[in-house]
Image (cartoon, rainbow, N blue to C red):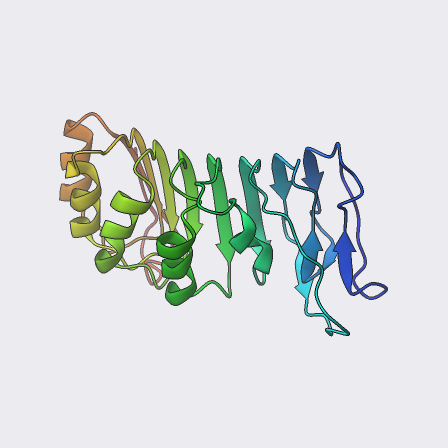
Length: 219
């Protein structure tokens, strides 16, 4: 289901009455910060959505965990909703298999908290992450937090070849596709090394990221 929502007229988006809702698309909308989908939701898309803070006027509604959510895409959002912390039940890993986060406000501390204390990335197979604060020190978070990753797309990260080597040499590594967009600190030597291990690697660097130099596209 695709919904166009105007947060100017509502403080929250409560959809818990839609007990058969499995797919929800809120792209191109101005969405209340408080989104309350039903626990039956399997797929949520917030492409280029704007999340507007709301004023709390009383006790918040008890929200059931989104323990059935398998796909979450948040392209071009300016913030991320607190419901991200609801993508699993008590003492239960989530079933999320695909996650795309392109969120300006998602700094490294938020990301570390999501990966270490929530546990809903354990079944993740496909991850797209735009996060400039990401660096080599975060490699262990991916190894332990996303042991089943098969596709990893990173944008604007400050990682070097060390990060790539750590991921691909982990005993549990299942990564078959690695896409690096504007991760200019990763050397071509590292890319060649990864390809020789049987990993399909794509490097896409814009002229802006390279400081006006020629675009480098390597596959």
